[in-house]
Length: 213
Image 1 (cartoon, helix red, strand yellow):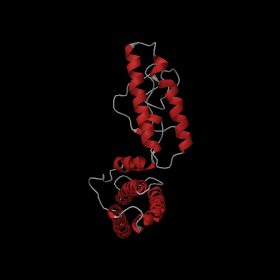
Image 2 (cartoon, one colour):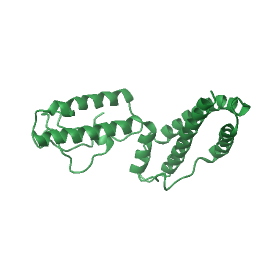
Image 3 (tube, rainbow, N blue to C red):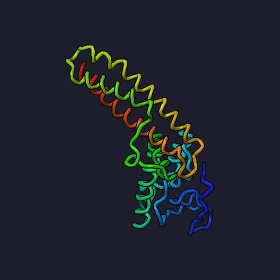
C-alpha cells in the first residue's frame, strides 16, 4: 500500500518516508514544503481501486502517531505540526473513503474536465432523467395519499439500482487509471454528473416520501 513514488528522506534520521507528514521510523513530525495529495498523505499510489479496510487501518495507524493529544507536552511548533497533520490526514481519508470524491479527484489530477467544464450526462441516461423528474414533480404537486406518491415507493429502489450501475461504470473506466488527458476522463465526468443527479433525486424522493406519511 505504500507509494513507491515517495523518495524523500527524513531530515532527522535519513530513513525513507512513506508519508510527508511523519517519519514512522523516528517519530519526527514534518512540515511538507507543498500540500501533499490525498494519496501521498496516506502513503498510497494513486488508484481508484482501494482496499477500504486497509485504508482505514492506515488512517488509524497514522492517527495514533499524529494526534495532537499524543504531543500535548511537546513544544509549540510540534503541537502545531500535529494539529496541521491531523487535519490533512482526516481530510485525505474522507476523500479517499468516498468513491465519488475519489473519482472526481483522479479525473482532475489526470487533466480531465471538472464539473464546471463538462456538464453533460451519458446520452442514454437523459431520457430516464426526464421520466424521473416528471414523477418527482407530480408527487410534489399531489396531495398526500395520491397515486403519484405511491409511485415514489418504486422509484427509490430504481434510482438506487441506477446509482450502483453508474458507480460500476466509473470503476471500470478508472481501473486501471487511464493516461493523463485520455478521452475516458470525459466519460468518467459524465458518469459522475449522472451520479450527482441521482444523489439529488434520491434526497428529493426521500423528503417527499417522509412528508407524505
